[in-house]
Image 1: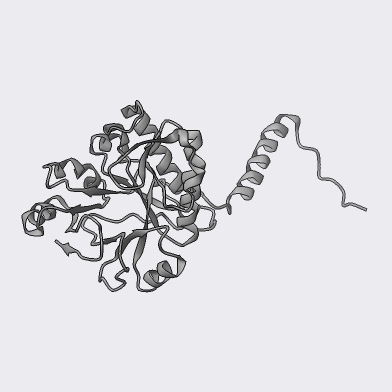
Image 2: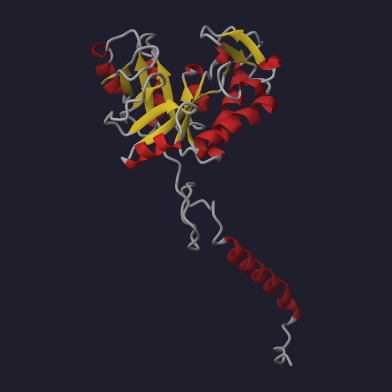
Length: 286
């Protein structure tokens, strides 16, 4: 037999009490769920004591780094950040770098088709445009978001599965080049924001590569910036929105010696070094 029911609740109070009970049940169900946001909008422990989610890594201005895309990887550079080719290196390389406290960025080309990549055949001919000056590369039609989204997502899955902390998506300024497609600034903004979202959905931080004109619109979507030759073109001041937001600007010069740009780079809070154009192990950091 069930225990006797309590005295009936007065009709005037029944509806409010039912609402309070429903809200309590919902709070109990959701309090421990992952992905809650704290008062500051960042992932963290929910007020009810739920599971803590690690915040995305975001490098700070002035963070030293090593960028190498060719040659035998130099594993002994004493810096806190490496940026390496995501296809060329497997998870064991990332683990070795993590073992000494290094964060690792996954270089992936998102704006051009490369004929030597293992997934090259997945890119339809219709989205391959003009050559971009590098052998085996052709600009992509970034207007084709539905076609490119799963292909880029698959590449970012690779980065995540290998343990990378972030992605460096290359060639994010096709609209300013002769791609073979009538690209506009609006197309580029939509594409770049899609790229950022795909990285964030996988727990990866993401850098804005070059695309100086759209920094004001995109600084909130990206966690850091990667820039080539802003000193040579007199454009480094245009990267200050990232620095002001507490986000690193990872910067290289190819033609200028470090002595010609390092003082100004330090003033601006950039993470600068001289590199050779083919991005081998050599570096001369500020």
